[in-house]
Length: 212
Image 1 (cartoon, helix red, strand yellow):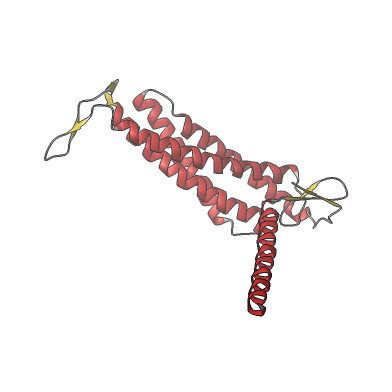
Image 2 (cartoon, rainbow, N blue to C red; image 1 turned 135 degrees about the horizontal axis):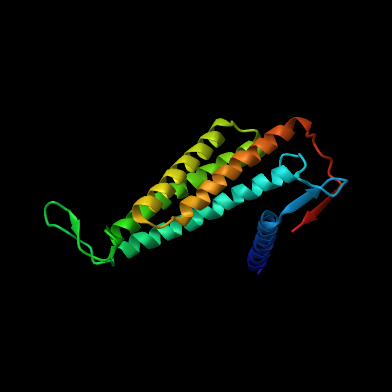
């Protein structure tokens, strides 16, 4: 009887201990999902780097958020276009692997146009991811400027050339390259604005916080 009571007590103790661990893990997960927003005495939001989120810093942050969404959308559309290219009736010769036949748009194969656009969108996916990561790091962590500048010019120049080429050769404007070009121009403007005001910024004191 004493052994049974001892085993039951040990089992109950382990169960209670496991319950405490589960509760602690649950609370930890809830804390990770919570977002703490800090404000200074003037009601201005404070960024992760401790500096106030001025109008220029907010605009640049939202732009880099836009690059994240552009990355996701570009990738999904690229996958859809690659899949759609296989249903355009285009065929390949047995040995030379030369494409022929299938649906046509003007003098161009629809399948080829879809694959070219998908290739550009995959480039845009990678470029948007790079711009988002390097841009956020420069904005909040004082990361090097060169990667931001390189992503800005590469995305802008390639998008401009692709937009002009697609418009003049195929005869229709490409919306994704136009969006990318506009965002690159905005990045140039917004990063300059942030850089100009940086010397005047001072660490902000937290006056209140909100948990969302």
